[in-house]
Length: 416
Image (cartoon, rainbow, N blue to C red; front, side, top):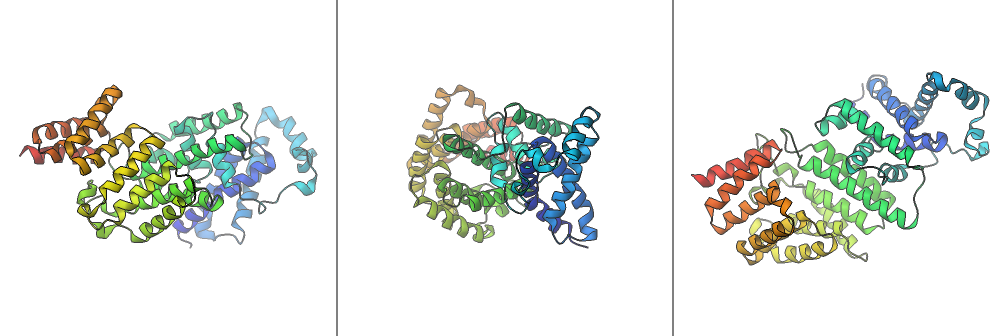
């Protein structure tokens, strides 16, 4: 019997290839995606006991194609059309091209095209994430729902609506060109970044991390990097994910509690991932125009290469955050820059940046991350009363249970 994990890894690797082969042949993304999922489920149920076929990709394509035909045949409203198209008409005529032009499943790797399609601008970021995880990542609807703590039926509806939105918007299974391709690539990178972040620090629920999401984001980013090795931002994103994920073993204690960066045992950090990430970001930064993911990766590299907190080059980190604030301004960048300012110029300077940020964006005044950052800077400044109040306020507002326990513990420690 083959280990289930081996089968699971293989199926995730093959999922976009199989879906791509079907969509290239039959054009209907929605129906092909459903058929691919059914074939993957059949393989997951049968291969561990029966063994992996000699040609697993071909097996999946054949089973998915049969499922696709079965879907059409089972729809009474389309029986007449099914008979005309799938039985009376040769497949090449169905596609409107000669038979020898129909690609074989082994001719193409359509992962990149699928990523671009799943990140269609007609979709919201949550829908892009869900569809990417299912169509390109090969995760089941149940797995995705569990990762985001929603009922399976809710996630199924989200995925179904996403596929319908692509159909309505006229989304085609082709690589966009020119400015559209560049714009869509930014969306692809952002989706992978969001998937990783949800795995590295879950927004809600009892666990601090969801490692399978982080692992999936890294796997898909590696795949994207193989397909676009000369894109500096693609390289930067992969470097960022590796350098950040390298700290994962030290981020939780024995009971699953959050361990902040300044208290982590750096001996537990994954040195192989750090070395790979540093090499990638170094290569990316020498390749021309510097983008946000490269800058974030460079910051992560400085943290990872420091033997301890005291040895961290905060001056260089501050310079990089200043560049990042110009390249991709946003509240989270400002929060992190405030910490860097505090480490270089003192906590009062950092608190001043936070005050300016709240003035510019009043809605952030109640955001738990800003309040927690302010609490940390108050603590550095020696104002334990203000720090305690802010830690408690941040704890009330976060939806992550490990983070809530951590913030409450810090408040209780200062209140003693």
